[in-house]
Length: 360
Image (cartoon, rainbow, N blue to C red; front, top):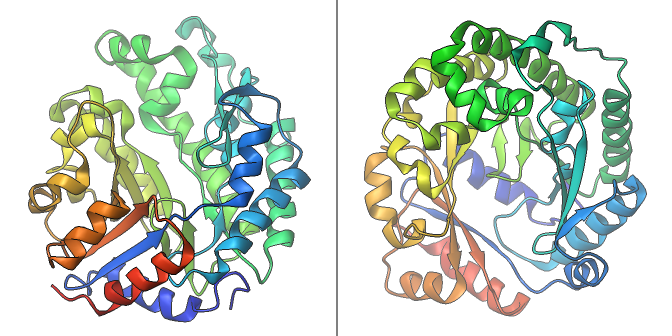
């Protein structure tokens, strides 16, 4: 099925069970081993701002990185994340100043954009145009990646920038929060424009990128059945649950309904949302991120899982800690573990033998 994943059929079968909530007694894992491709990237790029990279160079990087992982017998599905369009694409489509940043830890070159407007006075001039140069750049690069990936690896969905995330791009975070009370009608108009924009961007993605065995490759959850989008509730990490219910839920449920649902990630400072986010209609899985100042999700997973019902979860774990809990049979089921710091391929594959046999 995929040159860079000889056991893809078996892996996809297991992931299908996980995200259909039929594998609560099982565990799944991906193993992060040392990578010569990442070593080369880190020698070329230091963390910080950089220029827009040539797509051919990015394809060569991903080919090498994912090709290295073909010998791993874990539950990963090799796919490319179009990090160059991670956030900056959306603001760039309205002539925003797109900035790129290198991430040596994972090989990404991500994008963001400075706020487009000084105030709401310029909003009425905004128009989404599919003929914009940034939309052309997006479609051209996506097509190039699809051609390069054929038969070897997949293309991951990339983040939505809708709802308040898009308002952030228009006027910045501080003015966004103030506008919820001072200019609520303008926020509603911006959220409507964001829906139009995001549907166009993501519809185009699914028109250009073939599904893999009827599912979507994902940097968040590896692979998941259906045409699934990746949503961000980050703005509501800094608000009360009431603000999420008033401003966050409806836009998310609306765009999830346009596709076959979605996945979200929750940062450490957003864990007060853990009871409400799983009730979003169409939500298929959650990635629990780790952040400074908060307990590692892996260390308090049983507590967090009790708050999220039967929602499939993805968490990060260090190899030593994961291996110890695996040996003691203390891992929570129905979870995908992203295991970091694995010393080598041999250790990863030995560990995966136990992971595949593990039952809660």
